[in-house]
Image (cartoon, rainbow, N blue to C red; front, side, top):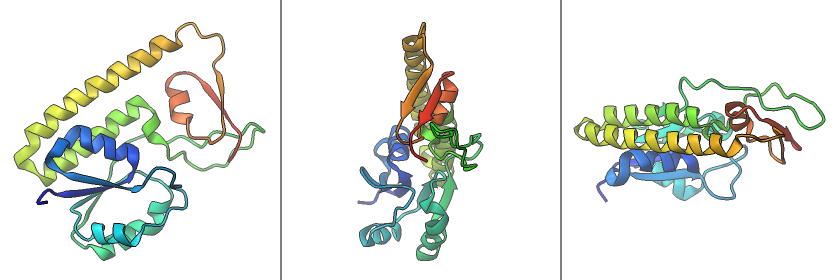
Length: 190
């Protein structure tokens, strides 16, 4: 009670907000475990919670195209921030049959360098929204960026000396990860 309400599109964003804001905000994700961000529709309870939210962090998943205007209409005071602003998008990887869709891959949260950009965008928006806690957000961001760097270093160390750089994935979600680490993803589904 009394904490600003921040809503995000997907669970990874909720984790990023928590790393940066700590307990200064209440964060809720629209798309939860097991939900499909490509076809998601918010529940009535989520729409009610949205009426009390101050910030919404979008990231470019499909349901946002249909729902962000509705969120703004339901809460004219809601500030919608593109948390992936400045993130270079790549096309969805071709399927194992070689077919390319021409769509951009929305799974930007699977690349450490892109998570750093997303996190910086989140911190900037939180600092603008709540300047009295800007130092807390900045300190938490710096600690989080160091943690991301350590995970990146661990992944790079684990991949040293691999003899194959190709991996198979059912859903083409790992394109940014593959690009970051010089891997090739073969996706079964489009």
